[in-house]
Image 1: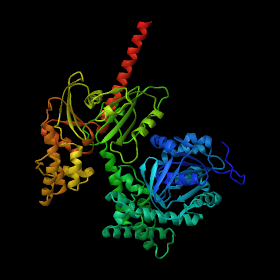
Image 2: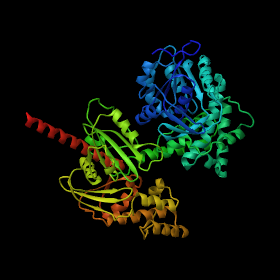
Image 3: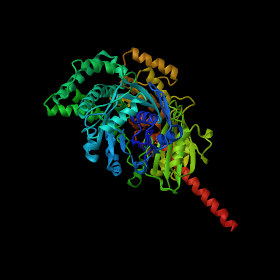
Image 4: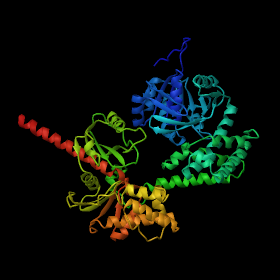
Length: 622
């Protein structure tokens, strides 16, 4: 592909961006607006589908809307574009997965840019492409996603900085800075010595607040508004400055005061590391506080606070990962276990095989819509979750378009509360049928299926042949369901994500007397006035729920399996139910998606029956 020509007749450098998080999308919009020959790449199919149709939109601190003509879903597609400058705006822990593929884009004129946070993050690129071809971009803007293709730009405190790491490609740094300056994203091209100072400055700022915001689930403004937290932030900065100065990085006398002022201007922004920690994802702590700790050890400087936050974040990350697999009480049969790893957010398990039949199950629940796509071997290749009352501008049609653009879906089955309002499916089934199909796929034979959802509780009894023998529902109100828990927890000021852990440590034995949400809220207030701890209140709520479930008809002589959104996030209920039933209760992994998996299985069965019917008609005609 030939380079585009600028006004004076010289070829424009071709720029590629890999990674379209907030940093990458903000950069992409500005480079495109500046008239650069640009290609963008991300492996998130939903995001790419939206960008192709609706472009990228920046809101709040910066308001822009831009469309792109070169939008790719794989690095391989960038090969034909053959960029002269390749920008990596990925998280540091995502780099290892893309570098081997990106290395195939190397050519004699290629320069690479690390638009990443942290100390030494550019060295990952240097090891593959060489230091002489590596640039570092230090960004001083930030944003959070309002939707996959919409960034709420929370702040821009200019300037950004860019440099060639050994000054051999300073012209490329000046070109990028010039383009960004032309459309007011102020950026300075600096030398290799000054960029090190800017890297340390930015990392010190990130390290001062990111871990605190993640652990406390606080925005920058909320953290800086707390005097005790502000004191910790200043001490973290002081430790880091001492380490940086041992590395011959010199700061102005008022640097710490300027850092504090900068952080106070951060506003209602969740730092990237905090978002990852809150969402149970791997973080970049090793390149933030962890890097400060390692450089401190190099110079025999104690960095106690940075070490404490590094270890806390790592411990929480480890716990989050382990918690996804522990406490389920269930190990699916080995031959089918790979089908059972149903993730909370979209997760492409395998590349679609062109021409192969795929089947979509949609569970339109009261709180969330769940999607599952399986292939002809019943393997889950995609699943996703979308809020039913969605305020993030992520529309149901966007997800469906993304799925159908990637997978040749032959049949769709819809289930759940909204199934009758969804007209694009070939099959409609109740969630009772879909739950039975999914659980029976792994565990055939007689069983109870306990499904606690956002608005109801269902007990499903399957017979020896996996047929639904009977089922029981709670009364018409939402007592004991996800919405009930959320409202009561909110009144008690308990974080829903912490309830299960709090309750597991409590010896409390009292239950709520009322399941009417209004009266239950009043009772909770009485408990609070009596000084009952949030751990005990959590336990009391769960005891009430367990009693509610146990009053429904559960046959304790057959295995019991729990599914649904509530047990996904409140696994301690399993312990209480086992005490009630005096028998083991198992939780299917990722229980929130079990019903949509069952719907996908039914879609496949219906498709095969339709084929048989058509073959029969055809044979009679012949």
